[in-house]
Length: 320
Image 1: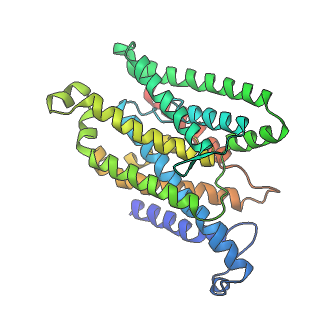
Image 2: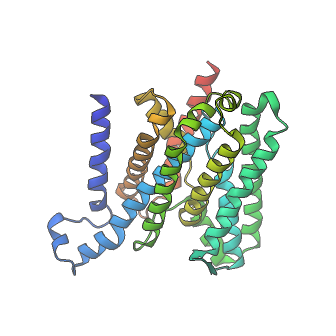
């Protein structure tokens, strides 16, 4: 009953969210497609809600993937520095003023993707030296990389001009403000590919979540599967961060909530995690637009305010 009420509330927020904001919209105003209300709804609000949903799905699935592969409930692309690497890559592209497009992908997206991929390879390489203490020490390595990337981004900020610095500040706070349908459609394709890939490897992921040795005994090429899944997740995170900026803690919060609601195996939580992550980020975005502030709050602030205490709670609960 509680689970049904939660899903109903989240679905209701998804339906109501396009009508909330600085300008109140009414359903009957949308019939006249040439009206200002219709333009706001179809060109701004609806694409933004869908973009938020797909972004939340990517972040939640990536969190579930990292926590399962590294067998640590605190592992996410955000805490391991993958998001910070993508942010630094995108920030460098902004500083250099790059706007070239390769195969339809902008330079900011490409640099963000390479930043995420570089971080993954660094983590995989450094994890070889951790041995028995891998799971706890790897998290510290991710935090150290994140701090290094933040320092490097501050150097980029120091060397930039006023316009570039303003873009970097807004970028690092995270934003879901978009215009048109290009970004939601691109992110929707990425979210679908990520979901299908993880679901296709759901049984291997279940075995890897227990131990790599056990997965090898079952015939799973653990290193190959792990690398492939991490590359796909890094691609999704890199592209997302290059568009929206870093959005933290969704990948940490959502998998744990879904696990509490559905204490099932990983393979049965994949679709539920993707849907819940989308609904949850739409809820956070709706809060930013509904607050009576002079300007819209960046989405990264809301997720950090929720995720910070949640992260502390997880650490304390693990110690207990």
